[in-house]
Amino acid sequence: MTAGVREEPREAVRPRTPRRLPLPTLLALLVGFAGVGYRLALLFADAPPTNSDEATMGLAAMHIARGDGFPVWFYGQAYMGTLEAYLAAPLVALAGPSVLVLRVPTLALYALFLLLSWRLTRRLGGDRWYALLVVAVLALGADRVVKNQLIAGGGYPELNPAGTALALLTVGLCVTGAGARLPRWAAWGLISGVLLWVDPLILPYVLTLGALLVARRWRELAGRAGVVLAGALLLGAAPMLMDSIQHGRNPVTAVLAAGGTGTPADWADRLHGALVLGPPLAMGFCSPGRCATWQLWWAVVFPVLLVLAAFTAWHTLRRTSGGQGSPERVQAGVRLALLGGAAGVLGAYAVSNAAGQTPIESSRYLSCLAVAVPALLWPLWQAARPLVAHPFAARRLTARRQLAEVAVSDRPAEGQLAEVAASDRPAERQLAEVAPSDRPAERQFAEVAASEEGGYRHLPEVESIKAAGGRPAGRRARMAAVGALAVIAGVLGTGVAATVDVARTAPGVHAEADRHRSLVDTLGALDVRNVRGGYWTCNRLTYATGENVLCAVVDDDLTPGFDRLPAYRREVSADPDAAWVAPAGSPLAARLDERVGAESGTLDVVTVAGWRIYLPRR
Image 1 (cartoon, rainbow, N blue to C red):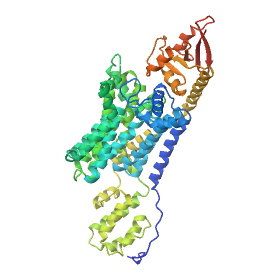
Image 2 (cartoon, rainbow, N blue to C red; image 1 turned 180 degrees about the horizontal axis):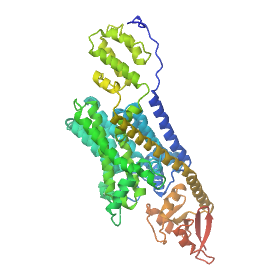
Image 3 (cartoon, helix red, strand yellow; image 1 turned 60 degrees about the horizontal axis):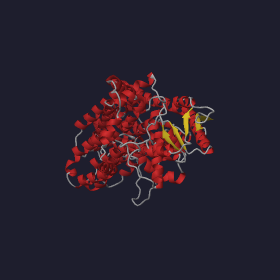
Image 4 (cartoon, rainbow, N blue to C red; image 1 turned 120 degrees about the horizontal axis):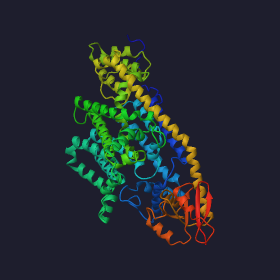
């Protein structure tokens, strides 16, 4: 009975085996590095393509770095805060203006998002293998996804890490002791305030997570915690509030106006853009700039999965016993809040004109659906777990079943524990140390059971263990597991295909960036300081030259267009030698070609790869 168990002096020092990262954690780390490395490679390939909106944020960073101004809003509008400009300003000051320095902070924000998502998945009850799945899904990078994550065009790169941080803080606020919560209340309020300034797209998550906190901690919020939360929220939103007071602006009105202007979109177009095109584009299942029919399958699965995940969380919340701080209840509550936030984001987008007018480009408004991925995929993982269980799960379950049998048996615990000790698994080695000890065995094997998975704090009941490991899954369970595994494989496979499509377009994007650099060099060689061009030409050119070339926007009919910085137009209008710049083959270039001639007052044309420069003839 006691073979293999040897008593050792209590003072003996046992050699410590070096701690190793669990296999799923190591794999998640490698997948996360691969996701960041893939995006870094895109940045060096000038992908995704930049534009004048990103250059506008770059101009704001330049002005901040030089102390010329400290803009609150994206130039030319009264909404969407300039946090990205403030993050990039030190790098612009050190390295000069470039697209790469604008995107280094956004890449760091993406890496933070992966880390926080992994942590959130674990805090919501997911095991390490499920956390690996979440990281793998978020590491994929389709066209719309990498644009939202990397382009410093205002708002999108910071939404996901901030929303995930709010969810993590909510978990902590619901389970920790009151004395440790004030810093978390302050962090929750500060992040929420900053998000409201930066971009209100995240507001549904703020509301649902905030409602959960009010429901569980309303007594605490009535005291110091409420004061700390309110003060931190006002501090985070201070730029927006101070500007609104100073200039009498209403950012809410500006945001509503941005949801789509002109003729209202038909409801059929809105619903098609929001429910059919929106989820596949936002979640990374579509090719660059389009969605093939076969890539739209997620539009069917997404709402079903959203409802199923919400029902599962609600059912867990209702049937789980324990107080308000019970870990299972907190996990289910936060999952339900995340799913409610995702539904709110989708609903707000569906009622906007943008969903019907420009569904492909406007799907960026759904970028923060990614915050809910740990909750959204949870039912799939629960159903598929019997087919993707850890290879050693059965052996661990056997040890736990033996532990549970010890707890309910009348036989001496030490004798039974010695029988378990014959195995060489870590838990069994610990059990061998329990037998010769004079501490209560039941207390020791409970600690062993907790140490095996790191997240368990109670011993499973014998019947639940036997139900989990002793009987084969029923036919329905096997069918559900196969179906869930097929959906997971579809998510990963479709995401990989869309990611490969982005990689294939990178050489073309790099070539276009080279042509733009040739344009900048040619303007410098021609000593051109002021130009007129289209909207998508002007601020990109001005930022690339570090404001050595100023550009005023014109429409295709040569009339003045929308200048985000009116000072540029004044400078250009005062220069009689201001040139014109247009992409080759564009409507603007065709209109300017009509003015090319040999007589005075006409234009001379200089051709650069992909561009045409028109110089006034004197």
